[in-house]
Length: 479
Image (cartoon, rainbow, N blue to C red; front, side, top):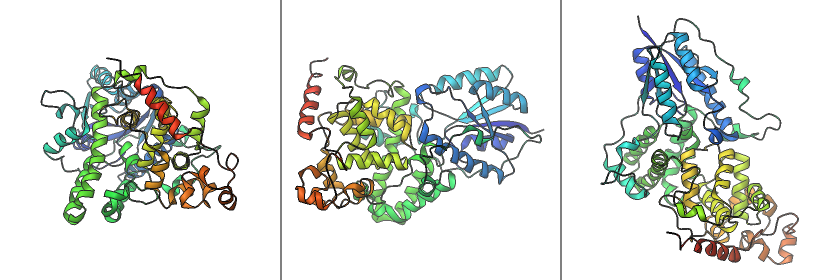
């Protein structure tokens, strides 16, 4: 008699390249389950925008299983209790899953393993969300890397990631298993529907992920090297939400990029730059595994003494895209309206929050966590600390992005800024990123009244820069 196995889905919402699912399928019939545990993760439980992506990823996964005659089981409650009960209910001998690296994951998996073993059920955990396991990449001294470049070099010296696995043929259990209804979870907004239009922008799920990857490799890679910093152009992959929810695996991305190098040898350098971004994600997860307090505490302990401000009006202006700096406001509005923000602009708005406004990086981390479709604990925490100067391999705190210069350099023609800050659409390029310097006649002809139709800058760049450097100077005497 064939065994029955439970496959526990988390951030691996796909059917291909899933070693645990392949193993479960080879053992017999499979009961796939997703558990909604609202208590898991505390303040870092899945937030608003990500819930929208989760909903549509689960819909796509349901369709994928239905094509093989299976039903994705949905259950709510404490993860250990739900999975233990489900294993008893279906008579499972094994529960399979992909490994996770969040601060709470190891203890959760161990508790589940211990609980299942009491009834003779085994937890089988497989890799599947990273290219390399954190234990497999270390310095010559055996310690975790804290600088990205040598970390990525070490990764690239390792054997190449295994070839992605095809989706297995699955067998359903003889008896039907009860499931909750996804609609009852109310993961998508309704009143108001702040995600209106997102269905036209995104296609969550495995098919959407593959389409995004193929479209990027087929059409945009040749322009990625230099074009990835131009927010008005579609030169980036926009794969981050798909990777966040495991609609695609990093191994699939890595191997597809390697194949593209053979097909497009002239794009090899661009592809290496693209893969280094996959490497940054990898680096962030390795850091999170080895330093689990990273989302909450400064990696560099000196920054625990940094004199952060607490001006809620400034924070609100930043969140709403009303700072008076057009490139900053464009980014924040893109985030609110699409659940996404171009990576170059993410760095600009993060620098503005932490250095122009002297507000804690955790305030930005929390806002991004709530608003981003790709809100990923490792990347979010690591990247905010990088910009704020307190992280591993951090950008020096005294590197302060000039929002005017950034706008003029990376959005010279203003296509990005005018799209997201339409009240400035008529302002000439010369003044677009510093409208307060435009003559009154130019502003009048452009239909702009500063302080009314568009805000005046909430801080002066030069003054803010000097204040940031003065604040940073207070840390120099701390050992």
